[in-house]
Image 1 (cartoon, rainbow, N blue to C red):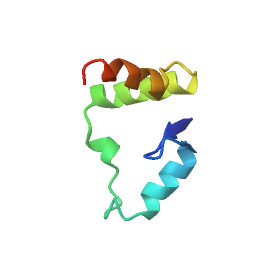
Image 2: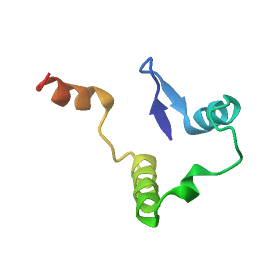
Image 3: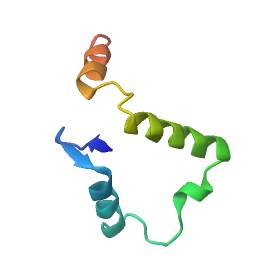
Image 4: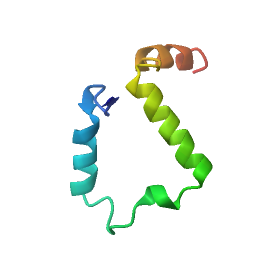
Length: 70
């Protein structure tokens, strides 16, 4: 899976996870995912599965829709 970073370029999921794990964002070894409700966890899993299948809208299209109201 790829995600868009602040410069609108794509980075791999593994690169993103590496960056988060080595950036000091998490000061503990506690997994934030386990603090979520089961419903929240399922929604995240569903979204990741959809993204892995390519079932998402490109950032450009989302921004075009968003810009209609701003």
